[in-house]
Length: 254
Image 1 (cartoon, rainbow, N blue to C red):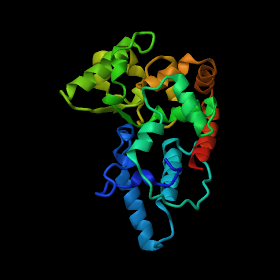
Image 2: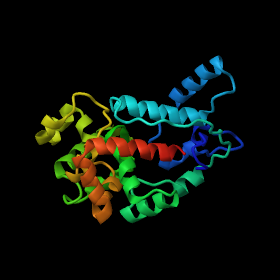
Image 3: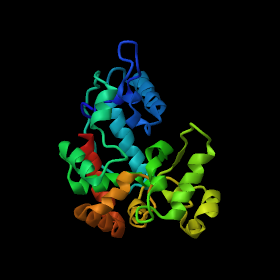
């Protein structure tokens, strides 16, 4: 919340029992152990040299490159310092939520000096990863104009199968879904499933235009003229998105 300072990595302590990591809005964050392992390896080789904040940025850079087969790439400068201020209330107040309307999203990103276009570009990261059912619960009763009924049924089946009180995850990208679940609820989509899962590309924009995205904040991009224009632009030109996503990630890292 104070910038790219790794404060989200801090665990709760008796003095600060509610760090950013504990904020409900951060429920989707995972793999903290990967950053810990990288930090431990670096400390062994060059103690006190590389901040966790820089590690997070380099991990994002490398993961984006690997998941896109090298099409997303940027040179990230070093020199970030780790932060010690970490409050769940700050994250809950200021981070964009999956339930936001497009107006709320635009205002939220604008406060950090990001444009509508950059909002749309960065949303494309939902081509990979998973989302908790609690983050898109309202979508399960949304009308067909907002979500394809067969996909809504697929999500409902997966979220209810875990039982009362559970909060399972599903792939952000329907193209990475379990073939059995798709065959049961959305058979017409079987031929579009990806053989290689977790591939970072422009498929998010195709999915969004087809109304088969998980989060309300994704679908909301279709309800504003400029945002919709950019969704269509990146659906038509994956190479352009690779380049613009690289630039937006670099800006985000700063």
